[in-house]
Amino acid sequence: MSGGEICDARFCKCCGGVSEEFQFCWEDTPKPYLIAVRDAAEKDVPDLMNEENAMRWIRSEPAAFCNTQDKRVLSQVLNDYDQETADFYRWHVGYTQEELMTLIQKKTGIDFGYIVDLIPLERGKSGRITRLKIVGTEHSLVIGKELEIRRTLSETHLYSSAFTVEKSHFETGIPQRFDIHGAGWGHGVGLCQIGAAVMGTLGYTYDKILLHYYRGATINTLYV
Image (cartoon, rainbow, N blue to C red):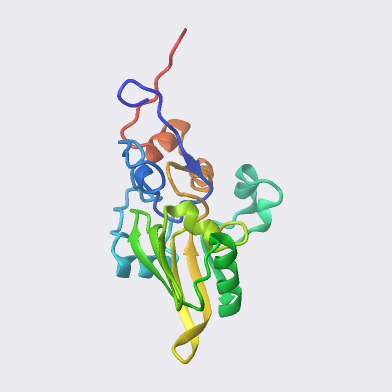
């Protein structure tokens, strides 16, 4: 509980090393117990709203509770088909110009022409992009928040919006290849399911796990 009310206890599959804050994914109404948390024992949260810091973070694999490939742990929190996904902590998706151009037009209903750039304009505390500018030869548009970005850049949705974009194979100034390198699985807010499962195997009790992710909250027993 927080402030005398039951918490809006959001959760995701894998925060990617730092959990996100509520307002960067949904309404601009911060919740004191849904703040950025480093998914490790007593570690400071890096400044991932800074673009250079976010790029370094996403392109590395820092230690975190949710940085695991332990099948026994993963089987506790993932459905059978989700267990086929092994690259959730750090992942990669590649598109040709034709693939990305077609995909974005399909998802937005807008003909951008050739895609020139995907520019992060704002990131949340976990490094997740909350405002992304799509630049085309015929049109440009800013999209967000994180779920719209994930849906626009994938047939279903990207694992998360914590990503960097690498452009290559330029022809007359137009990139012919886009490589998206990302971190985490889901919106990242609240409890990290994989991180929590790992904490349990390390001997953390349920109350320590809950209060690690829902900072400043309390666990109360209520009788009716």
